[in-house]
Structures are given as structure tokens and as C-alpha cells.
Length: 296
Image (tube, rainbow, N blue to C red; front, side):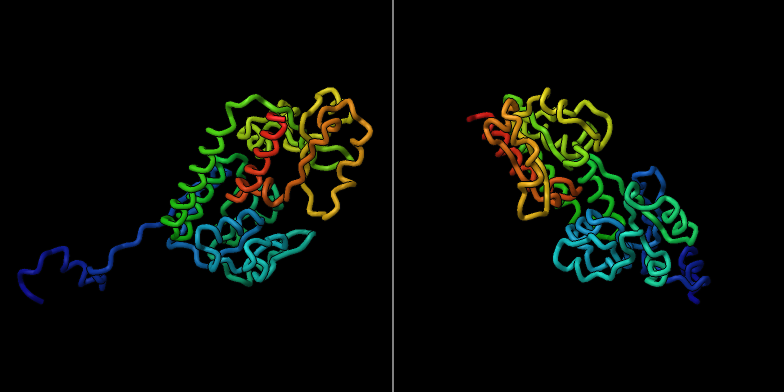
């Protein structure tokens, strides 16, 4: 060994460390439960436990890392070919463990708390996802980018998303408010409350959710309350081709402005209730419908 070798290089040689290779810093991200998720390297084997999670991972360029998903992950087309890790009764822990994931991303309110805790006890890193707002969608993309090593792609997606939100807000938010009733289900009659993402989309369009003051995500209401609120537009989302049955109960209530003027809007639920950037496609359609009521 040369006599005048710098001491730090001598130390590296003695412990067998390659001085030419930088040490990779651990990835530390806080999830929506406020818990720290720590990875020693970007996740390369991910199990996704919600459709919005799968879709966002594909959006930021990490779709190839998804090795397992719950049954309703259907977008993009490639997501349909991912092996399933459960069914209607819940996720299959044994199947997930057999896949040897280095990260599981769970939907906090849509996945059994006990099953999430079981995965954590098995020393599988778990990120709990629970977005509620448009800002949350952008923040989720950023954190998924950090966890998967796709930070650049995520930043570009976030920039496009936030720019489009700003454009919609500038176009519609200051316009004359339009009263909107959003029907989630007809029997029992369910709508969306203040904390729901759809309420935020309605507000972005310059609309006012007539039940936006309710604190529940999906409160049950009665017909009389809807009549009293007198919505100017009734919106519902359904995957059925024939939407007649969804809103048939309103046909006899001609005193309601939306019924009198036949102002109904049917939206694909994946484009208005899923916490991904595609919600802006549904929101754009919603904004146009609200504006049509405003300018009739």
C-alpha cells in the first residue's frame, strides 16, 4: 500500500468499500395515516389495494412495478392483466406474501385495518393512502414518485394536474352559483357531503352542492330535503347503459327546477369519484353542464 495514501481512502480499502460508489440514502415518506414509510431503495415489487392507487402508479411511470392488485383495478388496460390479490370478501394475505412485495400501498378506508396491520407485522412496508381533495391527488402522485424512483415523472404529472385545476378555477369559480344535487344511489337516497371530492369538483365549476354542509362523505337524505333544496341540476354516476331507472323517481316532481328544465347529467364514476388526474375529465364535463344551466 502506498505510504502517502490519504487516511480516508486507507479506511475504505481496509473495510472493502468501493469509494467510487456513492451511498444511497434511504427513502422516507410519511403516509396519509401520518406513519413513516422507509425504503432502502425504490420499490420494484408493489401490491396495490385500490383502483386509484394502481392508476396513479401507472400514471407516474411505475406501472411495471405493480405485481398484484385488488379486483377493481381496471385502468389503464394493462392494469387488467395484473394478478389479483383478493376478491369481494377482502384481500388474500397469503397471496400477497407469496408475491414477495417490497411495498404494499393500501387504501386506508377501503382495506381492513386488521389486514393492514397483519402485513405490517410481517415486516412488509405499507403505505396507507387516503386522499380526499384535489390537492391530495397531487400530493399522492409526488409521494408515489419518491417511493418508486419516478420523481421526475411525478413532478411533471403534478405540474400538468395543478395547471388544469387552476384553469378550471379561473374559468368557472367566480361565476354565478348553480345549485347541484349529486345522487350517489337511489334506494336509499344517498348524496355526497362536504368532505367528498365530488363536492370540491362542483365548487371548482362554480356550483354549490345543496348538501355540502353535511359532514358525512355519503349521507342519506330524503326526497323532501331534495325538493326543499330545489337543485337546478341533478347529477349521478353509473356504469349502466340505461340510466332511466337511476333518476326515474324525480319525474313526478316538476316543481324541482332541474326536473322542470330536464337538467340531468350522467357521469362515468371512474371520471368523477376516483382520486386520480382523470377526475379532471369528469370535472370538465360537469363544469360544462353547470355552465349550460347558468347561461340558459
